[in-house]
Structures are given as C-alpha cells and as structure tokens.
Image 1: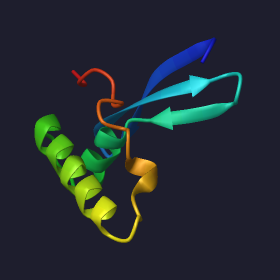
Image 2: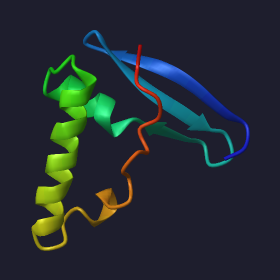
Image 3: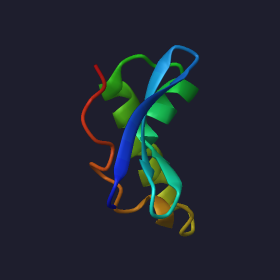
Length: 80
C-alpha cells in the first residue's frame, strides 16, 4: 500500500483507527475498534478478546469466518 493515509474516525465517542489506500481508493478499519464500539466496550483488551472468540466461533461454524482467518494482529497499535 503506497501513499497510505491514516486517520481516526469517531463513532459514538469511540475512536476507530482507519487507513486509506489511495491506489485502491479503499478505507481499512480496525476490526477490534469497530467491535468495541458495537458492544460499547471501552476496554481495548476486552474488545480484542471478544473479537478473537467470535472468530473462533465463526471458523467452527461451517466455514463462515474464512475471511476473518489470518487477521490476528492486523489491528495496529492500541488506541490512546
């Protein structure tokens, strides 16, 4: 990803890390940050554990979660 821009989006007082790739004109969002906002969990580690458990359950359910495989650690640095 060349010429990448990073920015924070705010959704109901939750900071969601995002990155824009100018080449593909695509926004990428931190899954853990989105999950934290959706479950209204301000603690990053709790939201991360929730996401990891959800990936486990989805992977065990007839291959639904295949897109989530390999995203471990793809969230970027913890928000401050």
